[in-house]
Image (cartoon, rainbow over all chains, first blue to last red; front, side, top):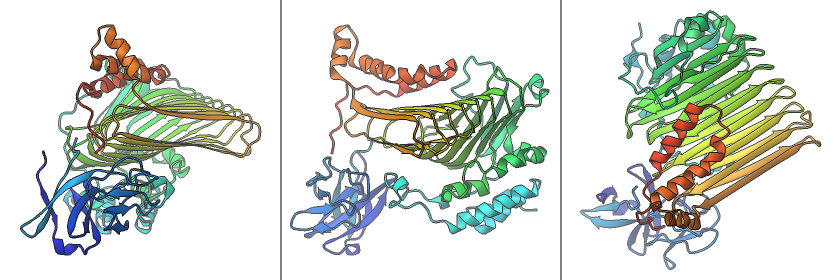
Length: 108
Length: 445
């Protein structure tokens, strides 16, 4: 299993807010919502476009793809609305020692 | 004198140093390079809001992690390649990090006026002969920033020139290899004069499975009237290589081209492959074989451009995908007003070996003539479980059954490839890559 990798500081993200980070050859959108941090692949499974810059909905715990509006669950990556039907990858996140750490899942 | 170590990236200073190393090149080529460099500097990198790039993400590509080719890299011992097993060759060229390492050409071939070998060397020795073909600009040097970069900085590469009326029975072979962190900006130029015939097998390789690297290349195939070319291009870089390529053939009156591509390697590949049928009764067959795994992303834009009447083009791309791999195929048949009685076909089939793989297939037609036959088709599907079950009832394991189904899937395109060593090499390479599907299928999340 991959190690946790420090990717940003909590102060780098407003709440709600998101930040695009590069983690070991993957682009990850880091999201701050309702005091929690989340990490998703920066890929909308509808047409492969980027999720970063999408609107974060704190109450619904989702991020919306800026291209066609598909929403994904922040915690699980599950597709919540059309036109996406498949989940995007969600990654484990923790905050320790003043850093946000991400452990990539789905590494082949 | 400028030294090779002066080149550290892709700045103006680096480009000047690159040109200084090529002071022997003809002045017309230096002018072409300088013009292309200006376009490279003026153009932006392709953006995701461009339709052609909307499904291909290059935000992780950083050109500044590479540097222009120098002449100082020493090639390590290289494997002979996959395509030449038991093949009697007319000539062979092996390149490493965008420079020729070894060249050979049989004397009886050279005596017929055939040129084959390093384009770097031959453009110096045969500049007057080659200039008209460069002036044709078969590949548009301004197509995008990658095309301009290549036109400015191409290095190494392969030339095959077969004079009018000369027919070559034995194939030629070229292998381009990359070391870890290396760059390959090679150009392939094939010129068949009127009525000439030849076969060229080209392939790529990396020195290890995990090497990183960059290929930004071009292929230009010029098939003059009545000529016949069989061309094979196997992309087999390691899974850490970025692969960007512009490839185009022009096929003139009564000429034929069989173009086979195999795509097995690369982290991300973005390829524009175009065939232009420029004279009446030209005929082109394009075969594509792709196998992707891990998180590979292979994107192919194909273009069949009918510019003259009574021409035929037939394209078949087949892809198998496992793990989280992704392919994008976008095909276009374009028929000009003058190209009456065109007969064109394009087809893309995708076999999904994992639910987390993804294939995007986007065929298209743009027809301006009114007396044509143009059709296209596309299929994407999983392995048929009933076929697996049947094979297992006959004593095969699940993995053996899946391997057979994958082999059967590709058989249609293998049957079209008329060169046995290519069929065998592609079949074996794909069989090795089919994973043990007895393993639990990874969940979608």
